[in-house]
Length: 361
Image (cartoon, rainbow, N blue to C red):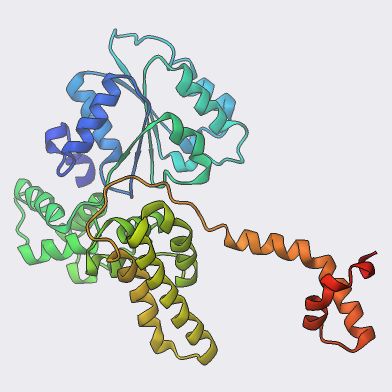
C-alpha cells in the first residue's frame, strides 16, 4: 500500500514538523519520557521511527491496547527498559496508542508510571487525547509534544510528490479536494489517493468528519483571533452550546485577567441572556447571537493572541448544584409536610424556614 511505501524514512521527509521533531530528539537524547499527542494520521509514530533510523537507535515498539495489566507491561517492556541493548545501541521504548489502556484495567497505568521512573532508556508514548483524566500522573512525569493537523496545502504537496513518483496524472484541483476532505489526516489522504489510482472517483469520497476535542475548541477561542476557524471549530465539537458555556465560565479566570476578563464575562453573560430567551420563547433565531457572543465575543475580548499554556478543567457548577440539592433534600421534605398541613406554598415555607428552627427537631 502507498501508506507503507511512502512512510517517511528520515525526519527530512516529514513535512511541517521541524520544531516538534527537534524537541522530540532532544528528549530522546536526554532520556526524558515523552508523550506525543494529536489526532490520527499526523505523524506521531513515524517520527519516532525516523529518528531511530537516523541515529541508529534500537526501537522496542508495543501497542498499549495489548498492555492491559501490570503483568503484561512487565513481561513485554519491563525488563527491556532496564537492560542494555544486545547490539550496544541506544534504545527507545515506544508505547503506541496509549488511549488503549483503560484506567479500570488491573494496574496497567500504575505499572507504566513505575516503569517511567525506573527505565534506563528513553520512553516515548503516543496518544490522541493526552488530557484524559486517566493520564494525570503521566502528564506530570513526561514532556508533552503536540502534533497538530497539517494544512491542506501541506497535504496537497505530499500527494503531488507521490503521484509524481508513481508516474500517475491527477489534476491539482482533484488533489486539493482530497487534501481538504481528509481534514489534516495524512494517512487518510494517501489511502484516498490510492483509491483514485485504482479507479475510484474523487467526488465519491466523503469528507471525513473529525469530532474536535473540547480542549482544542477552548484553545482556539482563548488563544487565537481567527474568525472563520473559531466558528468552524464550534460546529464540530461533541458538546452542545450549554456544555461549552460551562467550560468557558470555569476556565475564563485561568486565561484572562483584569479588563480583558471583565469584557469576556460581559459577552458570556449576554450569550446566557439569549440562551434564556431561546428557552422561554422557543425563538431559535437567537441561537446565532448566543454562538457569536460565546465564541468571537470571548476570543476578541483580548487585544492580542496568547501563547501561554493553560490546563483547562471541567466545570464544577453541576456538581455544586447536585451537592446543594442533596444538602437541602431534608429541608425540602420537611417544607413539603408543613406546606400540606398549613396550606402554604412550598416556596413560602422554605423562605420562612429560618424562623421555624424548632420544627426541625
